[in-house]
Image 1 (cartoon, rainbow, N blue to C red):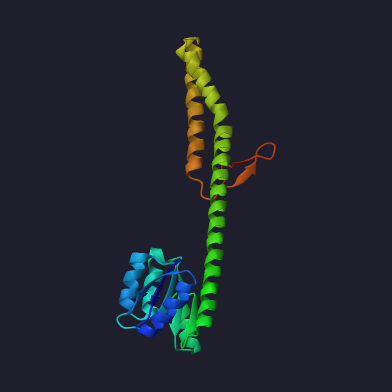
Image 2 (tube, helix red, strand yellow):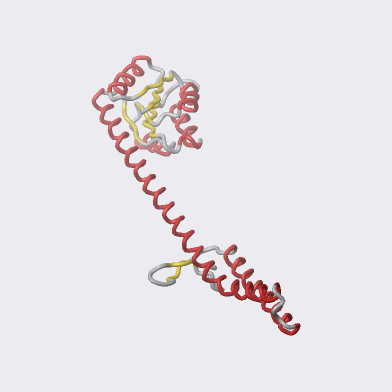
Length: 226
């Protein structure tokens, strides 16, 4: 896992790097907030440890920059701080940090925080994968329900329309029947156009039972409308 650490204290960066590399992380390090933000944009790390008080940009400011950017949605951010007041901790969380750890940092405490971060990221990845799979399944189901509804609504008028077109094309109708064929074609074309219009204007599609447990989108007049 790629991890960004940012602290203006060289000895603290060395401690953070040692613990993280021992845990198998690929570490990139910054000595101030501006460099941390630039490295985040370049490296896109999954885990970020930020010291609150740094030159150029504070850890809070870097955290806010990360959360505002599209690439920072999934990053796990731990703020390193000497402040312990409730208002300070709330400010950390309000800035978008996921966790915090106090200085001075013990190596074991840091390892524990990193393990917690790794587990939470794994849970979040699994959750997103499940949500994506569900969304795709619902999308595919919606395609099937829509196709069935279109077939159900259009099949009869389309059959009548094509039948009358065939009579005219093969000159099988009398002049009086030709007028009737043209009228049927116009009526069934209008009917099909109405189905298409209702499909395009659906705002809250509803599913109704069709046959043998299959379902379709409700394209009846008024169906799926708010």
